[in-house]
Image 1 (tube, rainbow, N blue to C red):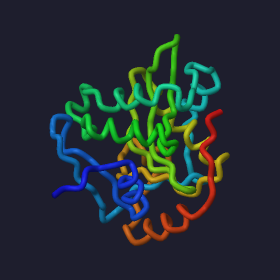
Image 2: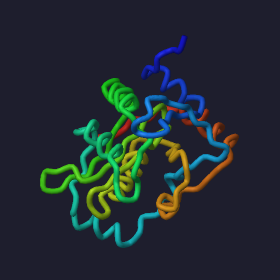
Image 3: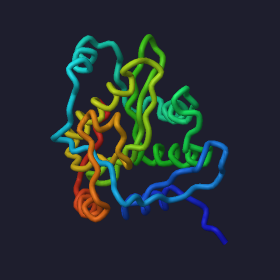
Length: 200
């Protein structure tokens, strides 16, 4: 008999260094992933490109936190020309919306003219933040959300930003890969620390 997935089970998974994914949007199954090499973005080494800094200073986007978590999930799950399918199935949406209601999941959102145009979401546990996914409907919308996330994590005394995998996009901001053993040591230290996710 299979134990149904619950928010509590997801938090236990994060605490030992594994995270859930679906093979595709239409696949109802969820698998837990434990990569040999893990992507992390050291908060004190975050690189903010000059052009993005100018975009932020101009106030092109309004940044909000936790005002439309479900909308961010929908945005992250939608197909794009570059990404035809997604690992976010309806069951994952259900579980993370529950985590949000319990106060463990958060979204950083970019808005323009009253419309949600980009953002990201993740899970906070102790002083670790597990970045799950991001989306953008306008140029730089998700990048601004990432910069806002890093700023908030620093203010909230977080010590670990887990990006799960290293992508070329994240590498531009200072993300790197580390061995699983090193990641687990960092995780063990982070989850026993106190941190608070600032919404403003």
